[in-house]
Length: 245
Ligand code: HPA
Image: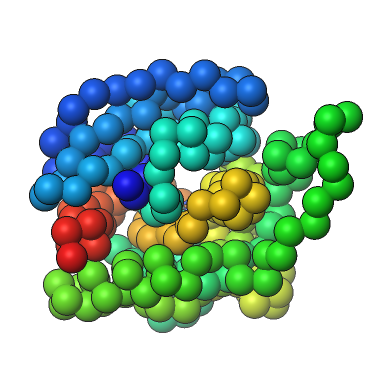
């Protein structure tokens, strides 16, 4: 069973035929909400709204450990993350879709490991390739079969938020090799790796990153909401194709 963690613009999967919801208790506290179970086509899918069902949790307030643990406990076998990003690379514009292949982590102070505390052994997991390549391929194949354009390589810079970045910060991230910027891939991706769940992401470019394109004069969240609304339809179709193929 695949799980989808939905971000801004995807607080529900409208093509999910819901069977039930479950509040999962975890050793790490409360997940963002109940896990929603259902079917897309004839296949089971679990869904979790990353920011809570009322979109009340900011990126730095999300209990990523509880979310990943709750999905793992529910028996899911892989996780697709859906999240919006700002576009840094010059060919990326609002409305574009990206399946990233790498991550740079600029977050701080987040609980980003299951391996901590007096009862836990020290563990250093391999994270050379932060996304599961097979799951990434499934996303790209599903998009290709729907003739939807998706960028198949992007370095995702994860910032702490909730504020957006300064133009100088975006310049620095570009120098570091980042192509898109968002606030949630870390520690989500590493916790999925630690708990043994294949993890891949599909990102919607909601805006030009700070200081780029029409963001030179600031970023308007009204515009972002409109863009998200349009491109989330494509993301739902890709997930449906992936699940049912
Ligand atoms: N920066 C960080 N996160 C984001 C952005 C951005 O410009 N757009 C959407 N999520």
